[in-house]
Image (cartoon, rainbow, N blue to C red; front, side, top):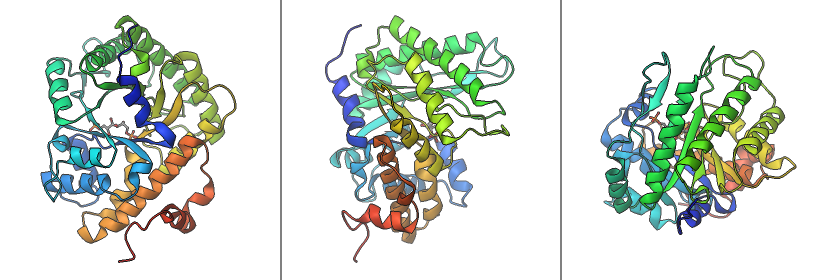
Length: 356
Ligand code: 5MM
């Protein structure tokens, strides 16, 4: 497998020293659902204001090494006319871009999906690189049901992920490879473990066949949990052990980092799970960090509520959760980092919004 100079350095820089990734790559349709659920009108300007709030949060560059944007955001300017991509880069945060075109029904596999977007991808990657992106992301989704995910669904998605990753590396961008086994369903943790293992094995077989340099990529998987609808939810310890077991069996040590998605977990629980994984004894040859969307944003979005006077409160929430997740990436998070005392400690190194 060839190694591409520069890609490994970028991959490692994104997740250095307890840093992780903010996934802010919701499509217009997804972010619109999240905004309207909180009675916030979704316009190009409100979406820009929300992303700018996150990206410009004071102190955040200590915890967030990379941000995944989507097509609209990477072309937007801040209220002061600075391209958002430059705003990030100027703060030392590496800009990334979601490049898949979303999921479509997979022919021959009723109820299953394949992620599309390979047509014209080389040219789009070239353009995004010129706009300032240094890494990219492509997400495949797998549903657990009777007989699902099927072998053709796993194969089609793993193959597409590998073609995407190879194209990214050709264009000098670090690919984040995201095979997400969804938490929807009533399945037990053991079923999630089995399915995730099969999916990861297929993905790495395809990455190898496509000559993707493992040193120059990041993996973004789900954690191993019971389905949201399962009556028996696993303990934090059980989730951590099962997650590390699957990764040890199916992810080569050449991969520099594994950045988990949160998948609809409560923000605090997503922090606890990451911390427990990092606190486990035993070999962990990759950096284990976060690339959370909802678990990093939900508290801030709730606090913002679309009101400009609420920007400081929202930034305080975002800064605090990123501080906690960064500690979890180092295995040093503890319960007393939550609550008012935790907020005060998170603010200690600088004053985020004051004194005046
Ligand atoms: C931020 O959400 C991304 C997907 O948005 P679309 O569904 O609109 O494409 C998603 O890919 C995200 O990056 C990951 O799923 C991680 O987000 P969560 O919320 O699971 O941590």
